[in-house]
Length: 303
Image (cartoon, rainbow, N blue to C red; front, side, top):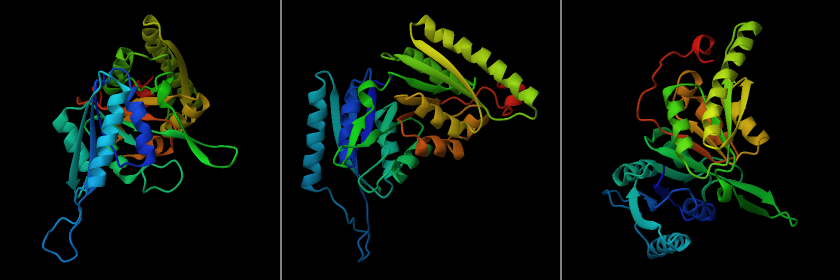
């Protein structure tokens, strides 16, 4: 599904480790490697550009391009540099110009403090992009000497996929893409009941949700893909992150909009909770078509 990928690199160690993930992404044939330099104004005024393309940056970008090419004989790699006052906007413009259906960003960059954080550029790309976005993460572990090391999720990125559903059109689009993606070994379908006035009403929502998600599960079974169903009650963003950890998933694969709590993804707390708090890679599937149903109450139609 994602034969062409755009990867913005800041030359950090974390970004370099993502190169292996990109080359190993199922079906990828073309990679656009982008480095954006922050445009600054000269303190003297006059509008001069304070940042310029250094030879070291050009050499580093060339080395990353050569490394990517060495990972796959059929992989076509194009490298480019841009200068912009808005790094995220430069990334998004490049994605539109190149026609890349997927932007891969790192959850950390060289300017971030220690910890699992999503930087300002990555968050801006996630919120403003009209293209699907994969937020890559690595496990941070300590060796016997107490030194921190990275372990990659990417060697088996699709080995155990967590796919939240809400029965909307965009959610169905994400499911269809997942069904059409090669290399998926196991899928965990999760639905979160987030509203209900009485115990009886919540119980009914849980029952109906499980029945509908089991129908989705059968579609994966027909393709020979192992699939399980989890239905929870609570805050959707928090529950998604918690299930991801409990099930040790390799990636969270979810739609960007939908009915109910999915509709808040680009502007609300759910997106922040999943993108910032998840310690797993997160792939946000963009749907260019509006949600088919504008109703937001799961009490009446979400289960």
